[in-house]
Image (cartoon, rainbow, N blue to C red):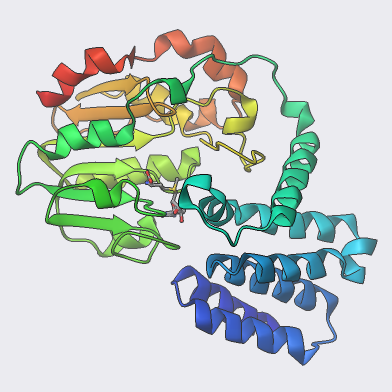
Length: 336
Ligand SMILES: C[S@@+](CC[C@H](N)C(=O)[O-])C[C@H]1O[C@@H](n2cnc3c(N)ncnc32)[C@H](O)[C@@H]1O
């Protein structure tokens, strides 16, 4: 019974109804279910809901309560599960913690907890560690994904733009088009849902599609295949976070307390081999993969069997196969 209340609370949180999620979680936390797992889950979900509501100190309080619950203290697996959940809130947390947002509600203790969970999770995956690192210094290049999308979306004032994964709308709000749709299950954009759900119900076509949702190879593959079906003739697709610099930035599940590109990079090896597209990776802002369709009935080349267990080493050793291009050389192409 109480597990189903938590499931309803989770759906409410995912659909952006934070107040309903909070009310349901509180009813479980305060109702004393007698089941330790239910209580720990409810504390985590309540903590997450409050973080989403930007009630940082309160959110942390419930995660602390989950971590110090006797079940989490006695059982390492439960403790790890709590840390994983706290970690999965890191996008929300990072948004609140960005110095430029001048958000005074950020709690230093929470920052410490986040750092500790990062260290802990990284060491848990140390067997994937790779000391090699690419030397791109993204912050030293004064162009970013918005530079690319700005060029692509300013060709025609009646163009239609779709963004998958909008977060705080940094990109979405900068697109100067009337016809734009943003899809995100948690924050920003215009539609509160996952990309899979959106593609299931959507009937519109778009000129420019920016894919920046869930940063896993499997999801990005799906997003690209679905996006290809609704791309207008002469349209462009851009994919963010194609170039992780080290194993931590790309590790799935996320173990990074900072930049997390996920393993989006895998799809770049498929796009290179896909017939009927013109694909490049622009070396700015964590790597932005961009392509336009030049042929008919384009099908994403399938390397899932080969790539599924590949790690950072594969990217590092095969980077020369990818069509990297600098911003200065990309502009003419993007304007075309
Ligand atoms: C990196 S942020 C997007 C940043 C934004 N595009 C920008 O450039 O400023 C990733 C976003 O993807 C969203 N997301 C996660 N899973 C998703 C999914 N299955 N479908 C769509 N969006 C998803 C997250 O909620 C998060 O807000």
